[in-house]
Length: 184
Image 1 (cartoon, rainbow, N blue to C red):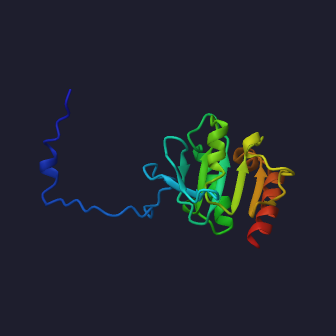
Image 2: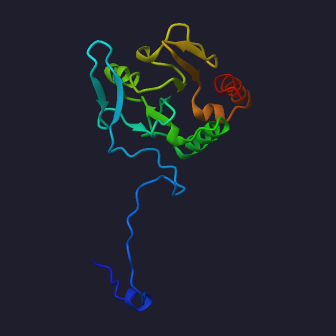
Image 3: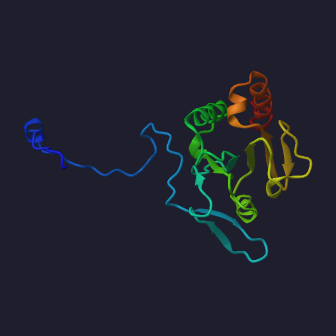
């Protein structure tokens, strides 16, 4: 059954122009990723070659403008549910960072090789919002809500975004570490 749109001719009496604009992410939407663009990752120290993460392998959201890697483990989500995304955005705004400044990766369902590739995403700061860190991403001595320096990168492991957003004490612990990391 086709729809009849003939009534539109009576409503629109003027010419209509379609102006294509460059995507600038200033439309007010929080679209995290253009999955068509692969993210270039660090050079291999031994060969000097540059690897690329293909979107089919690892879904990386954000433009990573400030080289902040945010890892989540949400098995039922492609990335984040709207409530957790809103909370993450508030956390980032508190330290003058937005969703374009980060690389967001949901590690749920990834194998060990993919997780090792995730480590290659350029970053100086890595947030791990998850209950348990998989062995492939674990760093010796890493403890919850205590940022640490490992191979020139700061790492902070916290609980899930949902658990933090519902718990005042966890929010305070996160904020204390954010103040140390961002000198607030």
